[in-house]
Image (tube, rainbow, N blue to C red; front, side, top):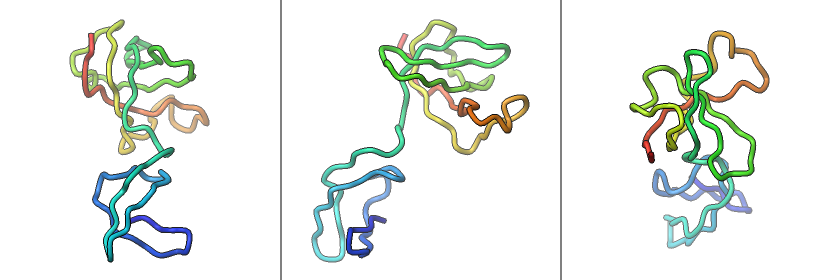
Length: 116
């Protein structure tokens, strides 16, 4: 659902934009198509897998930003430390154990592709 600046709601195709993205709509009658989406959350992250204790950690690959994602055991899709991977944050898996309650705990994620 997209809401325009006048507060009107427009149904849009599921997956056309991420939560929180600003969109440019092409409105045709009661329906709208997303012409362009910017901002909002990232869908996937490309980084280098390393290990920290029993978990994997994905950190930036050719990215000046400072971020990291925790990869629980069994969510690395066969990737090994040093591999470049594509990871997707897993909103259904909040930080647990020693990570729970930390203000800056890295979000949990899963590897969806091993690039090499």
